[in-house]
Image (tube, rainbow, N blue to C red; front, side, top):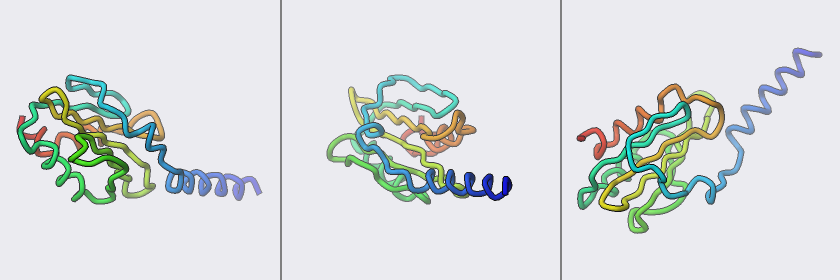
Length: 132
């Protein structure tokens, strides 16, 4: 009976991670960092913005597996994406914007305390950041 309860709790937790609604107002925020920063739950990357930097970053993000646009657009100057982990479907949020002649990307986790560097790695593969 105890084992059944534990299994039920684990399944409920997995369901919550996969089905919890996204709070667009919480996650689609301006990138408030202006320099490269790494932290346990995410990372920020900043580079000079060329004329098509956001469009190039957007194309890259839209081609990633398990990634969808949460809010924004290239025309608005800011886009937020949700990328889910392969096994459990943990959502990570990535906001990319152009401001003050810089392209800024902020990738962070929603659940947990550490992302094991996956957000940093994702940002560093975006062409506008991997070229710097």
